[in-house]
Length: 294
Image (cartoon, rainbow, N blue to C red; front, top):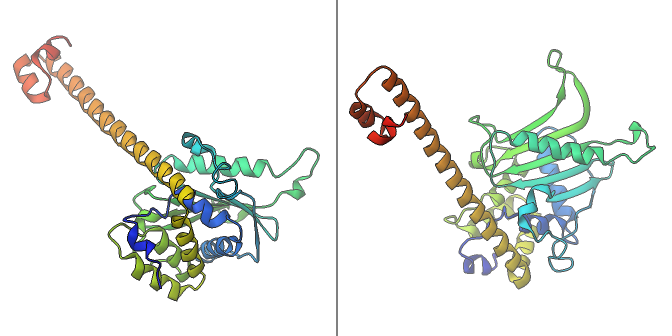
């Protein structure tokens, strides 16, 4: 049965990076984290792992003090980092906003983690794969691809250069129902629960499909009952909401400025052609004074 807390909270953002870090990094989370990673690997036809060791501290340790207080520094934080039994490093990032240039950011973080694998004097033989899994709550492009896996290939022969670079991009806005392999489907259903959805029904179905999601459900319940963690969650949500409003305002102003510049350019051309200033004003939206001053 679902905990009544699901009904007492109007809306809970399962993509809140503070919550995700707790879910995957808290003490005893290894099985949950391993399942999410393996679900991603299976969906991409990659090899799975037997075990993981969590490298990022749980935000619960030290009661939130280990997590950066300055949320504006989020761009420098890997949400979850772990190492597998064969030495592969896996980093998981949650990103709620971005644009078409976001892949460069992903590659930068992958490179940053890969470059830290070797200490001075060590050989390249000591390098191991770094796998980057990115959950995006926005669309990178207009394709229908929900989960994409990128590696380094010869563009002519499609021959793999090395398996040390593996980048997974999961675009959650494109996810609708059972479009991926069952294991990853369950995880994405959890991460895309919306305010209008019946959380109790959805979680009940997910748990039936994938028993380990019952542990996810328990951790969710523990999280929302913890006053201090919910306080940090609320701070993060407030910051994210403020940032979203700012970005939307910047985009709006950018569009308005672009339209104004376009109108000025057209007006200049009309003026050079000797068209009446009043007619230019009526057709560009610029005032007569603005047209006269061009």
